[in-house]
Length: 411
Image (cartoon, rainbow, N blue to C red; front, side, top):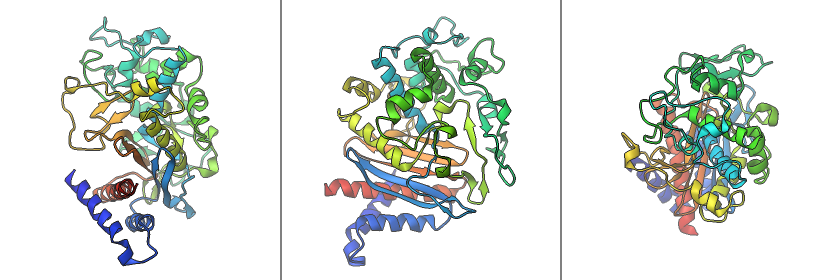
């Protein structure tokens, strides 16, 4: 935390002295130069950043390349998947479904599933939707999550592409794709063939245990409760109202020419892939569109949201857990979404609200400060794979924070 504050203070000093450096250098120009100077170390191929308020973006820039071999520029309209920041949309969708009378967060999930899901260590404890949405369901990710979940998109030239990730996992062939329901039944049903180690030893509702599988199950519950595919439900109730025209959950739903290649490192491209459990990490968007979404979240936090009622937003942003729900609690990282949670929205120990995300070739962060009502986001198309790339990432994030703080003080 000290390092972050020191970095921010240093950049604010640079901004405040900008008139003595070059008369035409505004704080925005200095921020762009600072970020570009970090980019020149070539730790990422391309990325975009934004700072937003309730009114919209006050800074929105992109750097580097969406396709390094073709020197195709990464822009604020470039799209890619953003990992677990996607989960925040599931929370919004669940509360919209509750508004529509299709479900209640405290419903047992068995009310909305065609197959049985229960922790075999606690067969009488019913798992609820709220537990899925707060990572307290006792459902955990087993080895099949990475082994079976990522699959190649068909009809692409795989020559020269990295077909493994995280050292040992392999992207599955296109003909191995399952539906979300079939995958989750295999992993969670007592009759499923992949259900080994899918549940912890803790009773449902007791301990926080971050779970991609439980989050994906929440999306399947929503599908069954509403009678609509998750991607179509969110398009109708989130993307369309917010005019997020470049965003979607599958490559068929977005403009392929805007799509960025993803990279293991600056010289190693990944193939195009998707997730069977796409709701937990497969949202495809741009910094421009994600900025619209973040602006709406800030509005919703302050009682002026447009896609949920005030009551629903109040529930979305109400911290659900306490010390008793954690065996260990991270109090050091101000941008950890695992200090507390609302309905699939995270709270850092210093009060920041948002989420992080990562998947092969992608890293993202999206947080806002409820005190200042200003937020920032960052989307990268390259893994953070070594200490130097992590340092560059933190440097850019802190530079955004310094400008965010300066803008707040100015207003």
